[in-house]
Length: 185
Length: 129
Image (cartoon, rainbow over all chains, first blue to last red; front, side, top):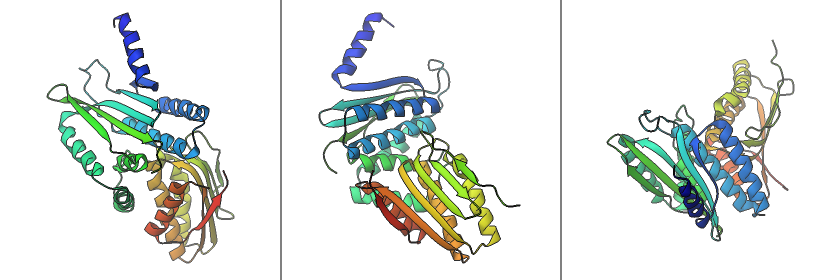
């Protein structure tokens, strides 16, 4: 990487209010550390407990989603198959969490449909939907059973923003942005 | 052979968990956000299954105070309540207390949701932070 690029990356992050970012393998130990760091940061910002809990809760789900559901991409992409990126930003309006990970192109339409469905639901409908999946849904071995993304939408109270970048016939990159605003919802 | 008492100290990702087979007391306190939730709760499931197999009529007391839990814990917590409900059906007196921090509406609602799904009444207790 060109060394001058490092400053452009820094500046771009700084301008977007990024307080923490990571690119690399997503491991259980990493998640423990990141959650610990973010908890301390939220304390140092003297956030009200409600916002703090919301940000922390959504962060847990986002990062564990990455950990559990990232598609294993054959090593022809950079030789790394568990690599992903995430960023946590803070602005006057609140917080944002952005995650990015490889996904098999065959899984794109299913995931897109699922997020669109969730985005179409009201707060009350999301609550009922969550309860229904919890009560009846079979959980996958990885645990989630689709509850994670519903819970993220429910806690955030904002529509989920996403983008799928097609990299090749087989591989795409999935970017998800979650906003957590200061407004009461 | 009577089962041994279980006591796990809290970690950044798992709650304090205590199960005393002698007094049939269960305490869960803290945050439950591990990646592998089933593994963490298996010792508790095993004891509950044993009580179900024995058709115990003893009084069972469960106190649950969670600060945070992830969605994969939510299913395990539901399974705990389902097992407690089965024990109640078998004739045991089951006493469940769900504690939540003042102003934590989400945690209060989670307790209400579990009551509705499982069909047993909890004692809902609001606590100061």
